Amino acid sequence: MRELRLWILALAWLPLAAPAQEPGTALKDDVLRAEPYADAKPLGDIRKGASLTILDRATGWYQVEAGSARGWMRMLSVRRGAAGQASAAAEVGGVAALSTGRAGTGQIVSTTGVRGLSEEELKSARFDEAQLRKAEGFSVSKADAKTFAAKGPLKARKFDYLPVPQQTAGGGSEGGRR
Image 1 (spheres, helix red, strand yellow):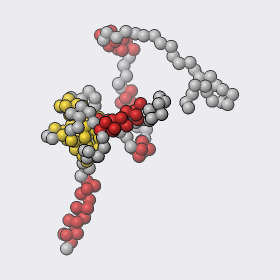
Image 2 (tube, rainbow, N blue to C red; image 1 turned 90 degrees about the horizontal axis):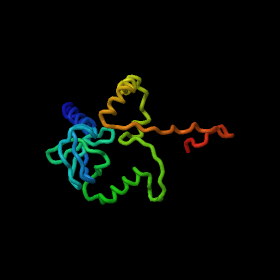
Image 3 (tube, rainbow, N blue to C red; image 1 turned 135 degrees about the horizontal axis):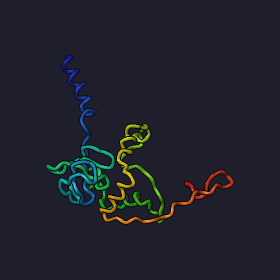
């Protein structure tokens, strides 16, 4: 009897331990990549409408399985859920509206966001000085940048910096955030 209880307990925890898999569909032709990065090694092409199994998520990418192929696709190229639940064209239109800020108003707006991170992940984010140092380690000197640009061939362009916002009577600044 005790063994039976242990088996039931183990089976109850199994869904929590196993990664959740869910069906998906390719919204458009895209490249399957070895890692969740735009410059990662391409593994093959996925055609619009292909059935996928979503295995994992990392930033703005889904790890998917399509037939015997397994790799990473951009989230915006994948519709979650079983095929036939919604029109892929409507879904692409909805995603495009969100990404451009045009939600049927005809007005162009500016939006800022982080794709691929949940609200909970953003709320629990903490400052990590080691990661900041790592990011700063990717900087280059002005001389190295000029050498790289010359090999490009990239051309220097002069531009005016934005003016410093003027203080208003209410203590705020003109041209600030709205």
